[in-house]
Image (cartoon, rainbow, N blue to C red; front, side, top):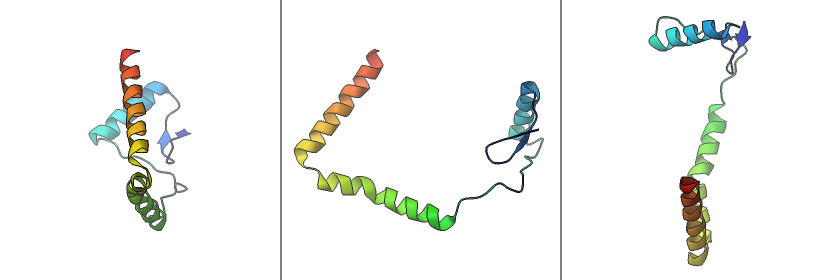
Length: 85
């Protein structure tokens, strides 16, 4: 048995793994988790979210109007370049 990213037990055979994934998605089978799978620390999650929520607005407040305009112009050019190519 192979372990998934969160310690799930999965069959070695790709076809069997696909069937198991389908059954888990349909609710016909339960996912077996290994006891060693760790969960995220709620305090660390809250701290990261708090920093992430104020990061963009703090950056925008520190930029000049010309800098914001330049960043937006480069972003638009990048988007158009991806669509054409």
